[in-house]
Image (tube, rainbow, N blue to C red):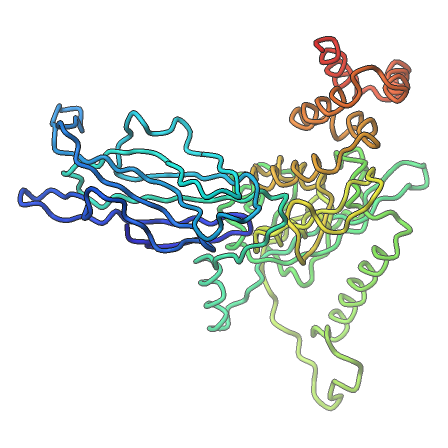
Length: 455
């Protein structure tokens, strides 16, 4: 097989091959090597694949017209080779093929589990190659490592990123979209919760497109409550500086800073100072060390307007959206520990590394809203890793858990497994639900009682 590409993400390596063939006298094709195993070049950081092609003893039906042609059985195997002793745990192997037919030994699922360390050569599947295939057969095999390992593999630069960077060589503006996301939570004069202090984040629209239909719709301003408009975004400020927390949809969002947070105060003040300087001078003075950097004898010229799209996000925290943008650019995400965890960890058990960090619950909620299923799974793994006997009662009977069946299922299973008989905490929560203090937990309690009854 001829390796034609290899694509890396922080937890996955996908290698794509073309099946090498030889032309037959009748114009058909057969695999170049028939009989013994053919070993590919080394893939990823040490594994390889074996391919064995054998001519089938009888003709194989290949189309609805009933035409039968000489065909070959192609067997694909995985050899861990240089990573055989690596303690990577359960990795997932997914094989996809183009212009190969399934056989009786083609796996029902494209995804196979393989546990490392191991030196076993494992079959990924058998397929049929018809000699009259009109184009080369393509075989792609991806190997995905557990996110809990914290691996951060080098990421292949996408074609969109390459083209966007190349366009800057001609002077094209990199930033063409400005987001405003609310950053703080506070009580107003009526002791009601409000979300306040929208802060800006900048990005390139093209690099954000194509990840999901829902995200694309939001960027275009279609079907979402968030306002989207094209303006001079250097001079635009959102009209709504505060919104009711009930309209935000997630009052316990830990990515919202409290009103007394020094970090939030610093970021808001920095943004206001920067805008004030732009308004008075007509230029962006960020990065200047002081008045001495500006020649007072030269006239100040206002920069031309930067027209772009502005999206005001009224249901997502600034920290969550910033972490999302970073993930879409790099494929890396860093989660904070759950608020209820006794031992806090700054780095994420899902995917460590540098970059902005956020709450896994906040990101799970956002990924669910935008249809970003891979990111949602990473957040779910982090939430799962953070629950324990010490915090399960608090977690399972939270408003967040009540909103998502997958979280409910995960956490109620953990609770029933670790507390086969009702605990004092469960009795207390039951009383609060009966008193109307936690009405949203009624469904979760019902699920717990049903699972306890089946034990």
